[in-house]
Figure 1: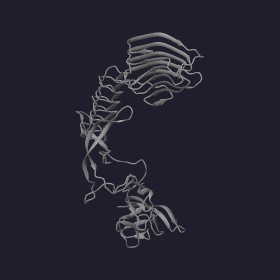
Figure 2 (figure 1 turned 120 degrees about the vertical axis):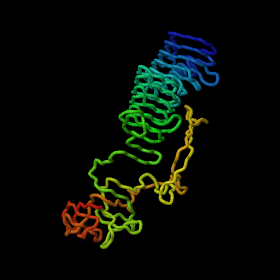
Figure 3 (figure 1 turned 60 degrees about the horizontal axis):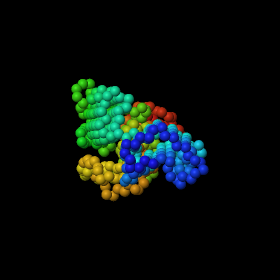
Length: 463
């Protein structure tokens, strides 16, 4: 037992237990009561079956400090743990441990009550868990290293205890808490929780929780603001916006938002792109969801008309809205994610936004909420007080009364036996029949008229 002593070094110490002796559920080796600057190296402990643990570093208010356990060999010593480190410790290091329990009855080869104990090089046989750290058990050994780190990097500056530089070159920096630069050169993680991966060219993740991936000369977020800003696969692109992902390319000059070519905005759900949106499918029409007037589904290929704000099968003389489609490349109005009335709108149907203050509270290693927090003001949609998120929601695509109506493009339409390629068609009980001019023209017949079914199928262009 080492108690209340400072500057203690024990090297190459072997302890062999008496199998017939009852150790009263106490540890073999203990470090306790304000013992400081203690080093145990080359320690062999065996045949203490009745001891509680091979080595205990007691925690609590009178715990010791700056303790190193290295090259520890444990064989059938301790009913509970090979090594146990109590609560409150942040300056304990455990390395190169061989722990064997020949009966397979050991609990943990190494257990640390907090996540702040450095653990490495653990080899285990016969324990339920190799390592238990901060209350979480790991069947296979893990490595726990506290403090900033530079690994497999020729240069770099991880400036805080929670920052890391990995496999990087050309003076990268990770300068705020919870930051990382990996597989990058001349790149910088500046904002709290920021990351830079696979990037170069003085790329800077500046905003809190911002990120840059596979880019060069990119800037994500703003110093002290624009939470959750990200740049992907880009060159000379700056994203000043929070909670958005952008990509783009600039040929020369400084990083600029003018080089953005696409954006996904997580706050609004808006997708913007400077180029063409194309589908790998052969879908050929543009469509919207409409509710049927009787609440029932309408068969594919039937022509429909508006009846108020709902639809029904088109009859002779009706204005034709479109045809029920299964080939739409763009479909609007599905309300796929939540009730369409979730957010309040103005008199023209536009969503009403208002600035809201959002706080994200920090938590400690045990999951307890701390009084410290980050705060940001964000323009968010104003939620309808009638919206109840606890109620189940079914999107329109899963409800029989909602139908996809192809409004323009190439659409398959049910037609009569008298329709030929080049004809314009009008409606008769939803079936296309020859007409004079109009918005629907037959391109070609895709299925001959079937008398039993009462229709053929034509590929028509609706404009």
